[in-house]
Image 1 (cartoon, rainbow, N blue to C red):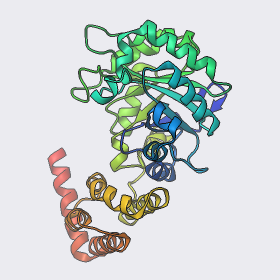
Image 2 (image 1 turned 30 degrees about the vertical axis):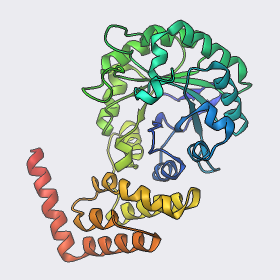
Image 3 (image 1 turned 180 degrees about the vertical axis):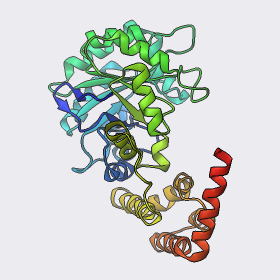
Length: 348
């Protein structure tokens, strides 16, 4: 099930990739996921070529990285080939280990600019664009992330992946849905397998509905893909890469982090946001992000609501400390045990 994963000369420590979820997977979160272990490659948010070339404030936030944030792919989107070429060189000059072209985002504001999954609608034009970007790069691998097709009437991923390989693309990531499906329904694992079968040499990464180590194992087993990309499941459990890697290599899933360790991850994330953005950004972000972390921290009634009312770092630390004190008290441990029993009863 496991083979060494390399993107041209770049050798990854694992075959597990963190997805570029727009609005979520910035450097502050990537560092949290990496600290939990076994992230083979992470990716920036979608980067607008015009924005990075002008180096506007928002684009620089999205492109922000640091020495610990490695190896890193920078993902570009759009349909203007000249701007894509310039932006690819910009990213290469700033140390990107991989340049990725987004051919999978289904969001209207991206597709209306001829980017994202709109590139699936005209494969010939897309191939010409990719060939030019590839010629622009001096030494950095070029990859692509795509969906199956715009809708069920034009499933182009297998043929496009084969042509991308011939054009010099070093890896393809395939999300097992069409644009029309957006994030509804189930990812089509067998369709991902068809993309794997269509290429000759390059690795294909499977993406979609990987919520557990078992899901990752099933994706690899059924499709023959070289690795998996995890997105939303990592937002509430950034240690999922550690769990998957243990499952794939040793056959077991480690115990979850302790409540103290989970609280420390939240602290690390908050202070990363302060470091790379500002205290105000950290406050605003955690008012939203607490609901993701809370999914793995139940019962947490004294975490979610107070966190949504914080105004500064002191408030944040106070909420975390109060929550942790309660969870470690006799009452908190009793409530946690009762919650676990109720979850087991529902599952069984």
